[in-house]
Length: 228
Image 1: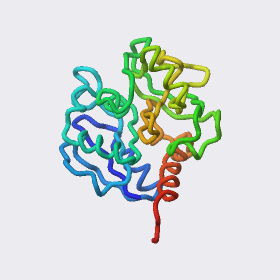
Image 2: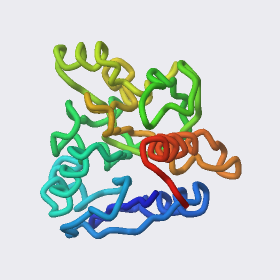
Image 3: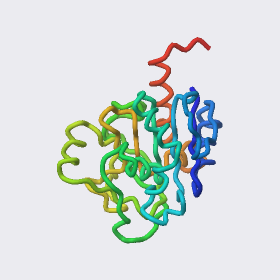
Image 4: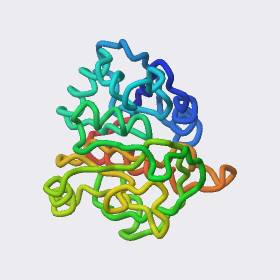
């Protein structure tokens, strides 16, 4: 399986994501600059965290207009797995690939620390390696992770099983319904504020994030004929 790590001006977690895929997962991966106009060679698309375009407007609001987002849209429509982490999640919201919006943390401060998550839905291509309601530890690092949507959208997220992860116990940013990560209705686009790429080895304090990437690869291999 071959992944693309999309790099926007201001991305700063692209190297972490590349390391997670190349060294810990053992799969092919390329850095792809934000002005790319073709992603056909890639099986999975990863939008890393950082501060795209400096986040001088709303986080992700400028990045959504990058050329590559047209290709990300095509990949999403083709059913390829799309993962947006932190700023990548914000970009997916701004581009309309996921519903809702992101607000400043309730305490208006940047936070960087490990948090506990509950696996709400383990029947997605991103979470099948976890047990339902499994408690995992993944680090956060954001100032604008307070997920919000209207009541109708929240009802749809709940009834459609689109909430993949919720904060367990401590909700660090005040997000609605303790939401930490959601998928689109089709199930192939995941946005999450915590950083699974920073939890791929016990040396980093947790290997719980590695299961997410392993789930993607397992799902892809089960749905494709692999001969080598």
